[in-house]
Length: 281
Image (tube, rainbow, N blue to C red; front, side):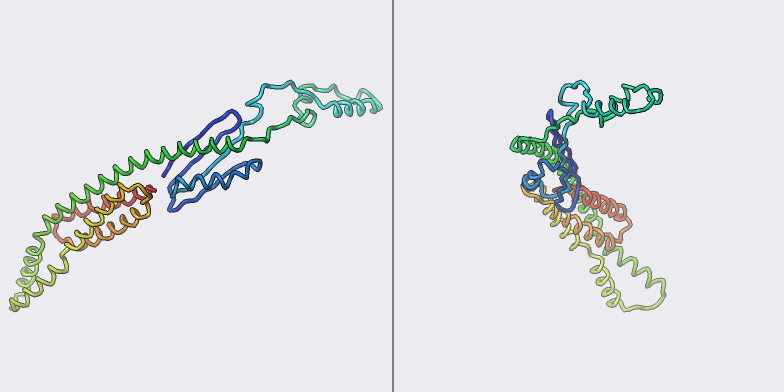
């Protein structure tokens, strides 16, 4: 599932992003100063997320954004060296006037400021858990929306199957009429018993009752998964593939012209369901 969470503190920020993935993959970008937290961070993530590509960032706030601006000071040793070089020159005329502005912009002439590297690791873990909680809540809201979408697809699919079944009762009659018309066009005598056998055989081959039954069973399994409290993304993905396969087989067997539009609607609905369940954990 796609989600984003961020916890901003004065000195640092935790940021977590997740996108759809067939399994769980965690990537971290943590400074070396707190690298020891990486294992703990990944373990906490695995406890709440079972599927998805997760990126975890620890971002340090630059010192100049968290501390008051200090007056610029030059390194006395370098300033003295400049004076000595200037005095040692044979002619003062070859020495240009020092541009103070450029001198202050030279980082090599400024005192190095101490940077903070110490963190309270327990506090960092607690703040990470808060950020992870935000991410999980976002994923749960998306999951609720996806459940509604998939449930609607299930109901639409079941309704289309019912309409196809009602029309399919006329299929044996259509097969008989087509075969009789072809025999009549041949203008030859054919054994009526043989014709009856062919009609029965063709009607059996074009019967899609088994596909309908399996589709309804799979749809019931999908509804059970939607009410489960454990991760069911993989099972839903498998069920969606099976539903699409059965729908394709049914499309081949349903020969009634009146069923053509309904069968297309059925395949479109099933394909949309298959795309949505890939986003579910």
